Amino acid sequence: MKNICSLILMLLPAALWAQPVSYQQYMQAVARDNAALMAEKYNVEIAAANLQAARVFNDPELSLAYSDNEDNTLMMGRSYEAGLSYGVSLGGLRRARIGVAATEQELTQAALADYFRTLREEATVVWSEAWEARERERILRSSYETMQRIAAADSLRAALGDIRRTDAMQSSLEALTQKGDWMQAHADYLNALAELSLFAGGLPVGDLAEEGLPLLAPDAAPGRLMEIAEQNRADLKAAELSHTLSQKNLALVRASRAMELGFEVGYSYNTEVRNEIAPAPAFNGLTFGVSIPLKFSSLNRGERAAAEASVSQAERYLQAARQAVRTDVLQAWNAWQAACEVAEHYSTQIVADARTIRDGIEFSYTRGDASLLELLTAVRTYNDVALSAAEAQAARLAAAAHLQAALGVE
Image (cartoon, rainbow, N blue to C red; front, top):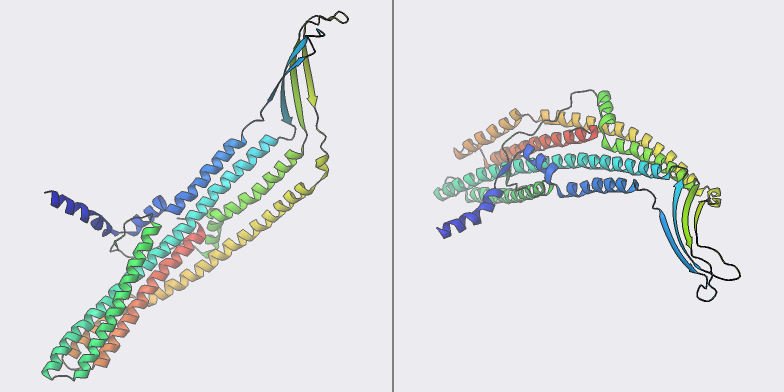
């Protein structure tokens, strides 16, 4: 019983790894467990902490002093002093700091959304590549199995003298060649599954679920799609927030150049002066004061000029970002339209016809009604058609992913 349990525990990870994964499960794992995405989320927490830090008030200053006026020798008494001072900015420096930190937090959230947008696009493209790798592995395996059957039959026919020995050798060599192509395709498919697992945060991906490729088809004209992109693109929102941040930084520079008054209040206690020449009773003293800095540094306009130039620069970047978004949508739309036309050209009927021709010539070859060259031509034609059809389907999904990313929608 103990050995059986140990065997189950050893085979359990392999069984989990062999589980097929659907596109929906994969994308959910990407959104939930992708390691790079989880690391990017910490930027939002850091920005929130910086905003909390920006809300802090200036610290007051407490001063304590003790003086001894040679009381032991001249009996001039002692004094104890305590003071409290606090600086107040007349330019709203704290409010400006909060504005900058709040905008930086929004910018970080927009950057995270844009990172997730790009991640979804890349993850979908990787899925399409894995699907194409699976189809390629199946097609080449089918061709290898076909040539393997032919090679085995030709070996028997050559032994019986029905065909030449060279023909049997030729079919055997073709089977070995097809096997090598299939083994390479199988390795490529396993590597594609490993890439899926990486994007999905370590999700065990042993195979793709038996389902068609998802259809991500937008139902709108290019002009409308550009409007949707301008409303949803996180990178465009980040560009807008960068422009706002430059304005907030300019306000912060202005606030830092404003006058900051210092208010002071103090209390002192003086002991009795027992000197015979100038005696004095013990007394308490209160002091109030205001310190006014002389802002000669404000005459230097370098920092302010740099902040104003940053505002103008951010405005130009925002205009460029809007133009780039519209161009990105148009290019993605054109690529998607072309990919759809190519995918429709390689219909399932064309692939089925190529398979029927291959199977028919294989049957004719076994009866001696077709040559080996005709069979090899049919096999290679089927491979070319089937591989092109799979590539076209995967390219359509990749183009749809690029268009979805250009629109900024899920």
